[in-house]
Amino acid sequence: MVFHSLRSIPAISKAVNARATPNYILMKHLMQQTLNAPFQKEFVSKVLREQLDAKDGVKTAVFHFPLKETQDLPFHVTRSSYGSLPVYLDYKNGRTKTITIVRKIKGDVNKLKEDISRITGEEVRLRAGDQLEVKGNHSRILRLYLRAVGF
Image 1: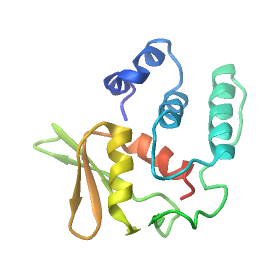
Image 2 (image 1 turned 120 degrees about the vertical axis):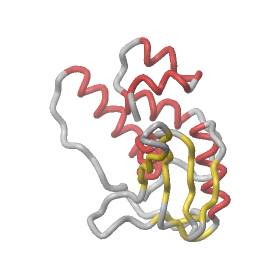
Image 3 (image 1 turned 120 degrees about the horizontal axis):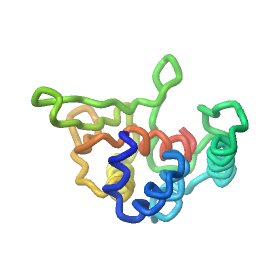
Image 4 (image 1 turned 180 degrees about the vertical axis):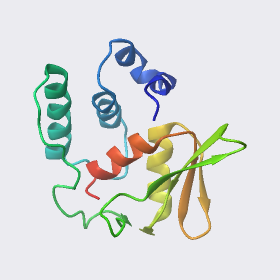
């Protein structure tokens, strides 16, 4: 997600203008949403602490994997064979239109669709093969969301 596109989310435009780090802003935005999937408080506090340390110039290890298993969610997102989350960008019309795609979803796709719609503020389409498609570049916030709920 381009840093300037964060201004399109009204709840966090003030923080963007205050020059906070993008991940810190996105995690604060995620915390304010009413979603179907509960957040792991340990993960959120770790990401926020990493971002605050990054602002102070303290080097910390980047955390990429979930803290624990999430078996109580109505949906499951499987990671790729290399361990990355299946959130992809697709460019159309000569790279003038960006679409974010979430793949490898099992379970209740509609619950995940509701959460993504609330997070991004955009309409989410269900594609063939249980793939979700959102207009715009929302890859960073969706990866943070999926990590926060345990995938």
